[in-house]
Length: 310
Ligand code: 13P
Ligand code: SF4
Image 1: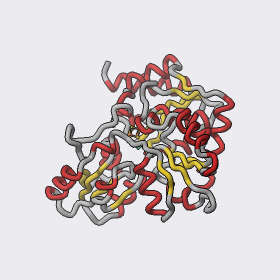
Image 2: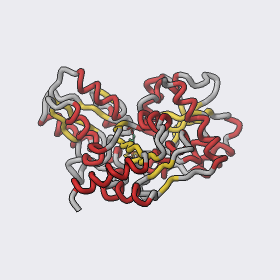
Image 3: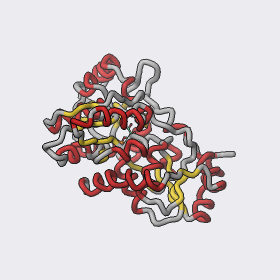
Image 4: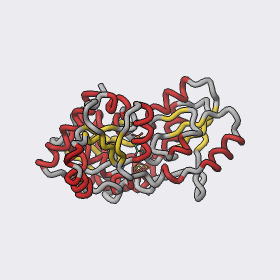
């Protein structure tokens, strides 16, 4: 079936089901184009919380759909492909975090969890952050408690340096952002002199040191819009380039590649397809559900984050 036919079917089903389609900026171009809203984790969490329709089709990865469920439990949340996982989430299993906290009870850690984690980890956290608000949230953490930041050691190290606050970092990382190499970026800088390097904080420090600007996917848009530069080297998952090119048509965006590929792709984000969106709306499945007790515990640190980053 052609994309045009699939899009027509999705439109019809969306109306019948009273559904909204939320998509992360790393989704395939054709998914971003049919979504009602495209954004980063923070903007998507806000949209999910405010959604008044019956069904939310979450085009992103599992923890994002789970977050939508936690924040708006009376809606049906569909994830087109339940295999859409996240290596950062996998790097911090809830039982390992619970065991670490138990073994370090005397430290009385204030747990700051990056939203890229499971509901079990969120339930153990004091506050959640996204890459878009990590500095604001950490700056508001109790000054008399040591901070444990999970699961991303790169976002954690960047936030700690920016806030001038020492933090214990969980040893987790995103496999996509850890693939970038200095050599590739230096090559691109030589080929595009004057193009600022814009990098996501999930990148390792040697990469961050080459960046002119470090920010969440969402903040890349106003930065590139307002910059006087005409071209940019974008160091994050390549899905954001579609959005940047669409919103800022007069400028050039160059994807920073890896040793293996000329662009960096998150295979989990790319599992969602138009066909799977049509199927999930037709079958009302796969649906993401969360246990009530865990939901209530995970909701608290999420609401604290949303309150602090208004
Ligand atoms: P953003 O919140 O910046 O969109 O990041 C989400 C993510 O998964 C980055 O890899
Ligand atoms: Fe997770 Fe990395 Fe994919 Fe983002 S890019 S969803 S952090 S695996």
